[in-house]
Image 1 (tube, one colour):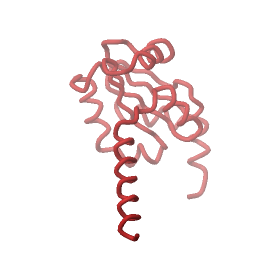
Image 2 (cartoon, helix red, strand yellow):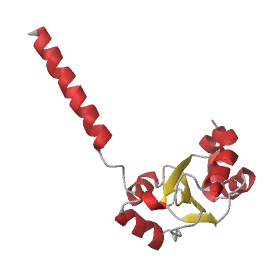
Image 3 (cartoon, one colour):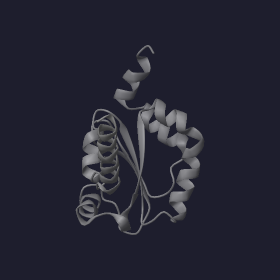
Image 4 (cartoon, one colour):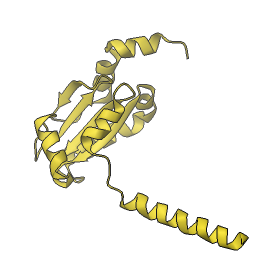
Length: 144
């Protein structure tokens, strides 16, 4: 009996793991909606992972991960050539993401676009934009 229950649990876990691997990723719109009032979002949009501007942006952000976390910043890479049609439409129409170019989009906790750049954004400029936001000002005044 004990072995049968264990086998049943193991089978169930394997099925759940398989489903998790094949489950579709959340849509771009759903990801942004889920982040609203919780996180700021930095979208790094490029046609593909080989984009030179995307690589440069990744290099700029790598050493400042702690500061990104301090500012409740969620960084997401968006490869426009790999998006499903509904996400392509959302990116193009709502976020004004070009199909073949690079763009960095900073979205505030309120869901609004706060900054848009078509070249890699230095961390100091990113942080100055965030730190000037009223909500961030409140966060900095709160005791830890």
